[in-house]
Amino acid sequence: MTDIGIEADKLKSGLHYAGLPVIAAALLIIGSGQGDAFMLLRYELIAVFGYIAAVRDAKTKKIANGLVFAMFAAWVTIMVPKLFLDTGAAIAILRDSALGFAVGGGMFLLVYLISRKGLGGGDVKFMAVAGLYLGFNNSLSAMLCGTALAALTGISLILLKKIGRKDTFPLAPFLYAGILITLFLGIMDRG
Image: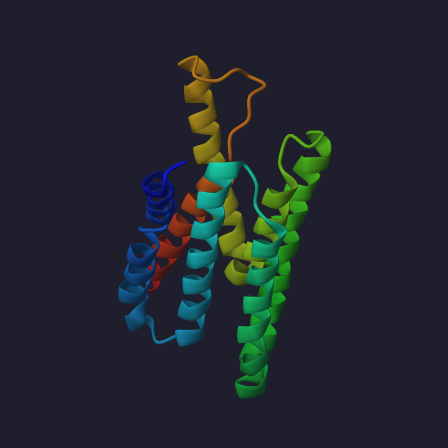
């Protein structure tokens, strides 16, 4: 491959992430009047990590363990100071986050096991850690929106004969759409 071809591939790969600043800025603008900077920070982080997971899953049909670990490490990094600065609020957030983790990871793990790995393990881990950021109610909403979008897309592609019934497609982009819908509607509802 020529140097020009390599550079074109690098540019093309970078363009996949071009929408990330737009989404992060939109969340920041819409949520800045809410007064809860910690909530906004959590939402910004899940928006960034979710975007990366969606792009990578769309390209490779995999969500890397390193990305899921980075999501978890970032969550721990923001929670530790919160525990010292506002212990009461942090404990409430931890409870809600633990429920979000259990619901997001638990429901997807159940589907993973029942479907005989019809759902990817990366999707299970991604949704579990996303549940830490989203909490119980937002995890449920994000999963419902994301899986409904994926189901509608899958049915449409089957009807259009673009894929077969046994073919797979990446789930993370749909989960990410569900997360964004949940975040934006939740922020606007508070405003």
